[in-house]
Image (tube, rainbow, N blue to C red):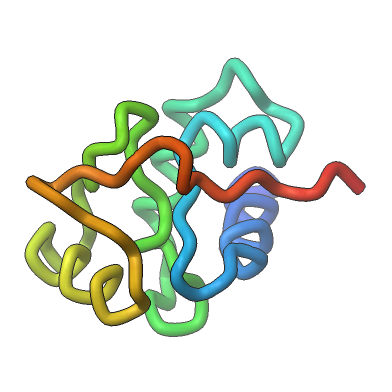
Length: 102
């Protein structure tokens, strides 16, 4: 059973378009918990369905790819297949997806 925060995070993850990435901090803002970045990151890490809920599309605020349940190499592979620009395990910060504020 998921917590309310986990479900909110997983729902937001589904909004990230293929070929785009966001950060844990931007995701925390999107679920109205801007000071709960660590809790949001934990919710991302507990994603029960890596196929349906694209948690590989969340990266660190400094642009580094970060970790992934399937391993960092797999995360880079998935993002590259989606067309994300990655160089030295880093994504340009200008490419971060910003959630609509509805």
